[in-house]
Amino acid sequence: MREIVHIQGGQCGNQVGAKFWEVISDEHGVDPTGSYHGDSDLQLERINVYFNEATGGRYVPRAILMDLEPGTMDSVRAGPFGQIFRPDNFVFGQSGAGNNWAKGHYTEGAELIDSVLDWIPNNIKSSVCDIPPKGLKMSCTFVGNTTAVQEMFKRVSEQFTSMFRRKAFLHWYTGEGMDEMEFTEAESNMNDLVSEYQQYQDATAEEEGEFDEDEEEY
Image: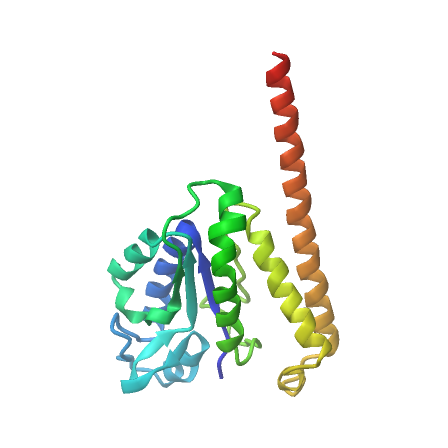
């Protein structure tokens, strides 16, 4: 049963993600080459929560790693578990945004977003997970450093809404006991999240405008 798709973005997200995969691989008995060397039937029973089985009996993280420049990806590949990923796990640009929000939002980021959004539905088979991380009931983390992530949430939300209205794949989830109202709530929560990012972006722009006016007066 495939359960979780792991999405990590930017320098911070990929550094956290690299350590995450070290811990998860160790818990599931997977070595840095993707081979299983565990000693528990329970590990094999749950290994598909985070991994896809590839040719040769190797296990590959069900993850997408994205960034606007290649340096972060090079660091991940050079890390202890860098060889566990496949080439199509990586989506990255060549120049980065240089902490320039507009550049990341309108140019480099805009060029990569379609690749990311195409990857996600192609790698999702089920999003119902009844196996929490070790020691936790549930875990969900978003790590971001700019409001540029708003556009990605918005695009994902639009695709979700389009598929939900067509009832695409809905039977997979309702057959496992989910209610359609849960999808309506998820859509509402995503739209609320996008709105909060928009409000934060607008407030930041207003503060910067007031700061510029104060400087001119000074």
